[in-house]
Length: 153
Image 1 (tube, rainbow, N blue to C red):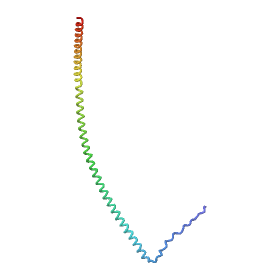
Image 2 (image 1 turned 135 degrees about the horizontal axis):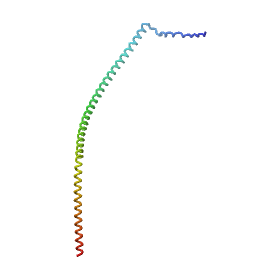
Image 3 (image 1 turned 90 degrees about the vertical axis):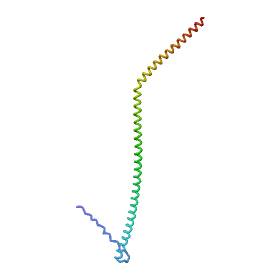
Image 4 (image 1 turned 45 degrees about the vertical axis):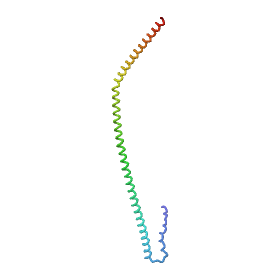
């Protein structure tokens, strides 16, 4: 068997020495109550100040919140106005695009007729140009023959 070691516990602390004042125990008790009473008054005063500060902060938060809500409503109204304006402009642009598309389609439809007209006109102009060149040639030939005849004579 192992040897058991015994530990001795230190003696409990002795109570604090009694105050050296020559006051009666009743007077000490009364002084303790006065100290407690003063402390309670101090805490109550501190609590009142804290409640007052909290009330002021609540009012400031409510005022701030009201201001923010008013600004939000103003911004929402402005955005709604802008949105309506943009919607109107988009609709107008859509109508203009439709008109442009229909004009392009109409021009596409007229294009073959215009090409045919241009070809016919171009052919007529070519024929006229050729006739004019032939006439100029004939005149030049006629003038050359007259010059030759005049030179021979």
